Image (tube, one colour):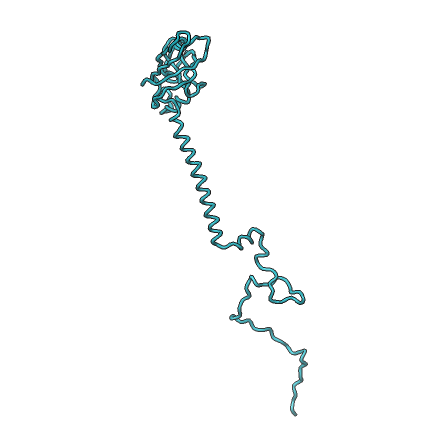
Length: 221
């Protein structure tokens, strides 16, 4: 007796999933659609891409070419180098001009400044000398004194013991008066071209009641 195999209806026919092939072409990321197509739309239309999900700044960077990014970085580096160079140049020029503008012994010019007087002692001045108001002495500006310093010991300052000639026109005698003084101290309240004299030297150039006068001076050695 022959056996017959029952027929399986078409709608019950099992279907096996398609086998994956290693040669199958991968779908490009930029062409992947993240939303379903609306009726009537072309299925090949790309609605959203990977760059659409990035922040605005990153998207702008992806939109630029590598050459543009490199040129921008190079321009930024050159700008920073220029700023640093200008700052360094200005600092060096300021530092180099400062000693040249000060009335140091290396500058053989004639300087004009205020003349005042003080009472030295009791005790030692910045140069380590004990002096009195009757001596031919003076104190130079702290700006000049400090600029000439070569050590932390003020007694070793090269300006100590140097001689200065001071000249002032005196209208009462119709001529100039001059005195020679020795540097023995440092004047904190003096400007660069000011000198602070002993009382006897000040009264040789002006009346004590004037207190502050203008005079000219120069280094003798």
